[in-house]
Length: 527
Image (tube, rainbow, N blue to C red; front, side, top):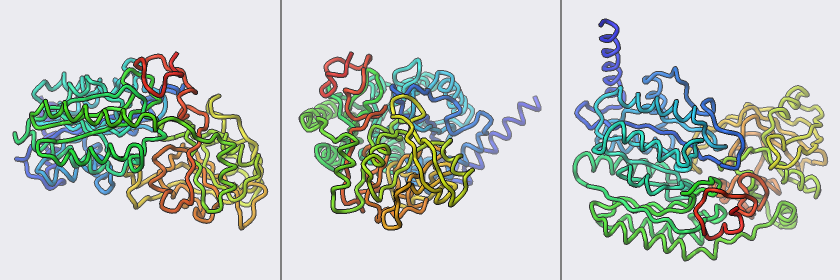
């Protein structure tokens, strides 16, 4: 009895601490917060396991809450939850909110372990009046084609039909119709690059406050156009997608419309729900939700002819960059999109830069072994090692690089501007900068070797390693649309490269087995 009483006492004491720390009074609605975020690439053979997620089983509720609220200074979805809760009179009770770098599907072991933590954490806390779920929307689990749907199903089963559940998703979500049935409101990022993550979290908290106060009764409708919306064209700031994005924002201002989401989908998940979606949420107006979801979906469908691939391959792209008068030219290595679940060690672009004797280039590549060679050699010493192409057989072969170790770094940096995803603190792991043979002070060829795959959402991936990005002739970044927010402001030209890899933009590189039949833009890749 003493142990039971003690546990109960400390739990109530912890809840009181949250009230004090957050500045909320105890009579405000308490909203649970949880989430597992992962973008799962079906073509990446390396599974994502428990150790890849940013949490530990032994982490206490106090520690998880402290970590969650510490993120309020960023511009992430969770930061939006926190700001929205403060604005609209909610109190947040966070449990497990975690994520992992995009890679292969999540193991059942990892998924079930984390879901047990979420359900038990939510149930162990105070009486909840609603739940916010911070999910990605493109998570594939070994036993579940839509891990996100399974998360909501388990939360719904645990807390019943009456519990308000508001879900936030990434723009690249592959939304299932069942997901829309299971939750009360689904909101996705409107923008890609994702500069509105904070805004969507804030919006979710706003709608949750209206639900628990009885001001609105949300109904929602999903419509999925029968197409792949290729990631090469998922830039919401330009044609062909810009008019659809603009219309979704305009519609959201109409009376009775609570949320409008147009997601581009994630083409590297071989699942039935793969593809774009429109979700319209209204205040108890099913006819309006149905009408507008169909209208926006037709707008997507009408852009289909503008989404055909005609991008240069690596050899042509390097040649184009060398011939361009301005600088820097940004070559986007789309086949090795780290943020899309690739390895970060593709060597196709590196091979072409060296083969074509390009001058003034810089690129980042993941190769822990290569870093060790540089570290052991020391700054100013010779470097001679075959770099990249080690993770699998889809991203090229190791390329011999000769040069000098220019510098070594810890690989951590700060991004103060709002960039893709809203993150502020980043870590590439220890890094080595190699000045490649043939370089000059005027035109240095610089290879940055990292010990962690580093998505190029910030130009500081170069700057923090001593690279003057505006002086370089060519910068190679491993991404898709995400890098544009960081590099467009100073780039002379951006070239999206149709390079091989698990995130190749051309669907003809892949064989799909589980997607719906007859999707426009992917006909030749279906086996």
